[in-house]
Image (cartoon, rainbow, N blue to C red; front, side, top):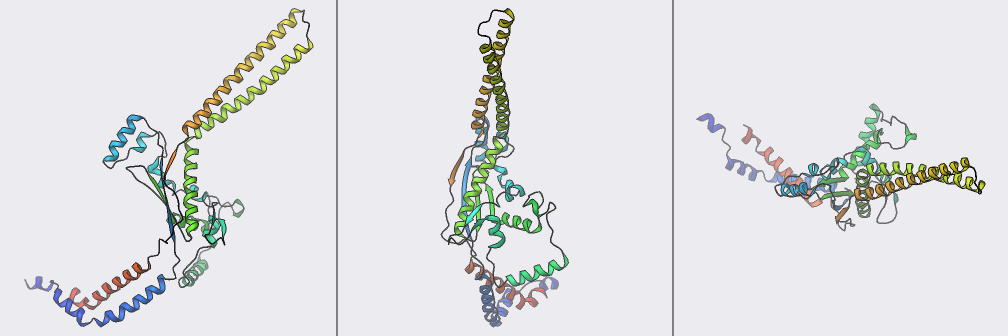
Amino acid sequence: MEKEKNHVIDLGAIVSRLWERRMAFVKVLPVVLVLSAIYIFPQPRYYRAEVSLAPETGGTELSGGLASIASSFGFNLGGLSSNDAIYPLLYPELFESPQFLVSLFDIEIRTADGELQCDYYTYLKDHQKKNPYTKPFKDASRWVKSLFVSPKKSVLGDDAGINAFSLSERDYGIMEGMKDKIVCSNDKQTDVTTIKVEAQDALVCALLADSICARLQDFLIQYRTRKARMDLAYYQSLSDSALLEYEASAKQFSDFCDANKNIFRQVDMTRKDQLQNDLSMKQATYQAYQAQVQAMRSKVQEKTPAFTMLKSATVPIKPAGPKRVLFMLGMCILAGLVTSVWLVRDLIFK
């Protein structure tokens, strides 16, 4: 019984102890408030733009009905009701792909003040604002690290440019940083895809959101129509070859007719019939291939997905962060909790 009493925490004693030593909070909290203000106020502002689109998904009417019923219960059958390997639920995974992220490096951006116009890669590499108070410490730690570890270069060499297959350490770090600035999410019930882009300039933010949305649509169009475009290119090549053969046969037939206007010999008449039959066959072959080309063009148009833009990109008016007041308040609350535990540690842990 005595042992159980020793493990009971006396809340009244704790409150009394904190009240007796309340001057410790008067000393700690202003210091924490000043230090947190010194840290958070020089932090560069950032803006956030958002776009939402609803892609067209393939599937039969029956499967579409099942998907609607399942979505009402919080399930998604998009991958089952579609013949595509990349359906809306996998779009966020696409934004984790190095090939897709590296393809965004060449997006042209410009700042709201008009002083900077370059590609997105250069903007991330050379024009990012940093906290002047923390920058010397980061530069010092990077310098110390360089003394022991040499920076990794691309296996393909610098002449190969930026290649997603083999990135240098610097380019890989830039790509990893993009994953925090470009976020794609998908609503499992409605299949609505939302893309959120973060940048230190409002206009850059909106331009990136609009361009990335266009790149995503172009990627999906290229994917959905790839087989139809391959078939179109194949039949187009056959049609071009058939046209050359038809033109050659037509010229041969015309030359023979011009050279033999008055045909009396049976051998010449037979030769003319052969050339005419060959010309008719080449013409029929060319027309058949042309019909296939037109059919494949219709197939490409049929396979091209349509996207409904639910929310377009706009230039944000107010910055999304950092939340300076909330940060300072949170640091003061944390400091108060730590100070309280320190003052009553003997009452809690004895």
